[in-house]
Image (tube, rainbow, N blue to C red; front, side, top):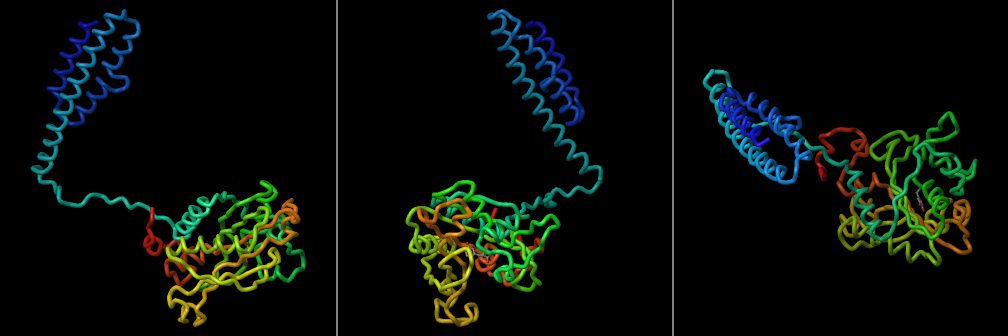
Length: 343
Ligand code: DAH
């Protein structure tokens, strides 16, 4: 066995010396030390040897491996340097000062960046992230949210109907009912996702946009909890203490329902074009979950209460990054998207 090793050493060193190009050296490396290389194959016999022999053979084989690796590397760099010299002297143009090929890394979409940030904030407060289908059943999109057929509230959310009677969901609110049915109470969830409406597009309307629904249900949940969670969310998103106010707002699935306004951060509440001189920016609708909706979700409204909110993710991303035209976000125009590159 030991003899075999010295024979291999002699033959291998000889071949390495004779190699004429870096390609040949690489071939030799594979033939000697590769997965099915000669030395590797030899080492497979180890397991059939007696202990003493195995020790000695193993040691010698390892030494040979190190020795060959060293020789191969030295020969490889010697020959590759030659390759460069040759190509330089052959007169072919080879400018070693040219910059290399640049590989561009992608970047996250602004809506994704904002979504991830909000998910981080809410999971930190013990909320779970859930989702629901984009092609939704009429029951979840409307009925179970206390919007029966022929209710005028349906008009505000004109959508695309599918031939099987389902529809492209107009908001993420159906996820509320699905989550209640699946997990019961107490419940703390957020549901980010894509929504659709039959809108004519302009700078602030798109047929496809993103929302983030939130819901918290437990015993004795009150408007105070709602205000606290919303304030915490917004001060984290905007990195400062924020002032908010609630105005009454109508949504059939909450009672009472609110529009939450944010004190304008551009003018500090004095009035400017961004807040249309009112000092406040309408930011997110929310409210206390309507007892009918709790019932549809299989939760007893006598025992539990909860709040819900629907954050316009697309709108928030536009505000955060100062994007004035919503159509940019779905345009797939990399020149616009790259500016927000957070990876
Ligand atoms: N789903 C509503 C919409 O898209 C927004 C909304 C309002 C969600 C009030 C809520 C809520 O959870 O409580 O217009």
